[in-house]
Amino acid sequence: MMKLNLITFASSLATRESIFTDHHELLDAISENYDVRYLFPEELDSPLPGGATMVLVGSGGVEEMVKAHIDRLPPYVVLIADGLKNSLAASLETLSWMRLNDRPGRVLHGPTGFIVQGIDDYASASQAVERMRGMRVGIIGKPSGWLIASSVDYRAMGERWGVEMVDIPLDEVVRGYESVSDDEVQDITDEFIGKALGIKEPSRDEVVKAMRLYRAVKGIVERYRLNAFTLNCFDLIPTTRTTGCVALALLNQEGIPAGCEGDEQTLLTMLAVQAATGQMTFMANPSKILDNAAHEMVFAHCTIAPAMADRYIVRDHYESLSGVAVEGIFEPMDMTVVKCGGRDMERYFISRARLLECTTNPNMCRTQLHLRLDEPLDYFLERSIGNHHVIVRGDHAHCIEATLRHLGAQQL
Image (cartoon, helix red, strand yellow):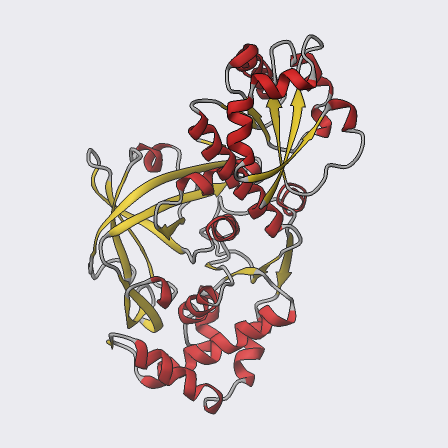
């Protein structure tokens, strides 16, 4: 059973016994799913025990008390209030003060089932954030020149996300590629082609070169102990005469979030989504709005983990008409679109979506998803967080949003 710490605040008029009696309906429901440890203000001088930690507002009149202990509370403060004993009023005042002082958090209030679901979401988010701490994120080559709004502050990522950003020269990829022989990748070439629905433009020799690059990049991931990376793939084309699409696709499939073009913000979004959901992700360009009123648009890119798609076709790379790319094919399904960004990864967009079809427009990247989003598309035209966005199979909006909030981001 998952551990849950409830830091409990109540006015001096309330006894501990009365807190448990007054809020027994909610507390009994929480204890059905969690091993709960109740902590009181006088116990906060010691480090918090392991497990998700939230605040139980037991009554009104606790605002000053929470304010005095704010530095001992989690970075993201979840205030649980069932509405009894003026707990909601006190929570709203406290949240307002927190916002004035740039302290992220929210009030969790509603029917008991709603509160318990929210606790589940934020407890899972706490675990996701903890899984990310200590991860090493590689930036292989400098970001592509056109990504003028997609870099991050490395120090902030260490402090807010707990990840280490590692710069790696692109020359190491080239040297690794040159050291891999064609014979070394014959088996994985056969497997990749054999599992595909078909192969269109590339020759087998082109696929062999793409697999040599995959081996080279995988070697760097192992050497630097990377948990995720982004690759300036376009700068590799002149020196290796192939594209990085297959390398990124296969490493994503192996559980290593791998992003294109050196885009740091999108890579970190991919990492957070995978930590929250356990799912592979697709990094894509918003390519064309088809119907503003119906919130329908196409997202496209040339690399996707084969296992994420229902089927795939081996293609060439759209922009360069060279190398090897992956065209993923999906049946209609629910998906989630998300992007977290800013220099400190301080803001995010998220929307549930329905995949209507996979299109085959010759003037777009190879994998093309025609989605109907829940959220209006004005976001993309007025306040978009960069270009690339991240797509994951299924409706995971709750757990992704909770994770991004725990990381200090706020919704646009």
